[in-house]
Length: 159
Image 1 (cartoon, rainbow, N blue to C red):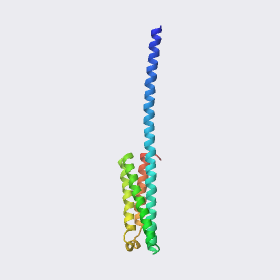
Image 2: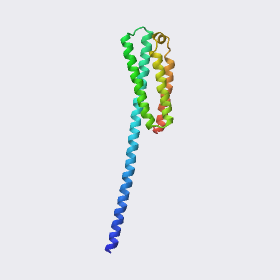
Image 3: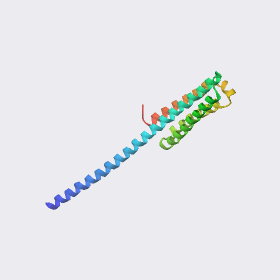
Image 4: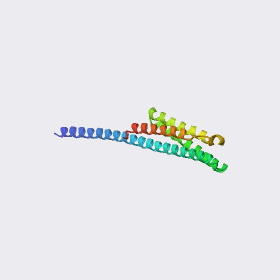
């Protein structure tokens, strides 16, 4: 009897150890997936925030140039802020490349490039900015941003 009890006890302990190992493995995978999703959401939020910031700053430069109401110092500060926002967008884009699939990264790259084109147009020669119709750039950015958001939602399974 004692040997049957020992075998049953050893078998139960082995099964418990295997189940514990499986539980640890599944929990670890779940935690990694949770971390990756949170990192991805953080990267998207930062990326989109910088996109809005860069677009708004470019729009401000265009408006002030049209109104002849901008000093060289103010223009320089706004340009620096625009460049900083665009640089941060590209930094977040690098994170997105590591965490998201290509069908999300492609539209994100297009959005960053649209913001960059607007930056070049808005911070170029001041005479050209006065004639610049910034609505075309803003529309391009709006469409690209909408595409990024829809692809990101699809990937993260958000309705």
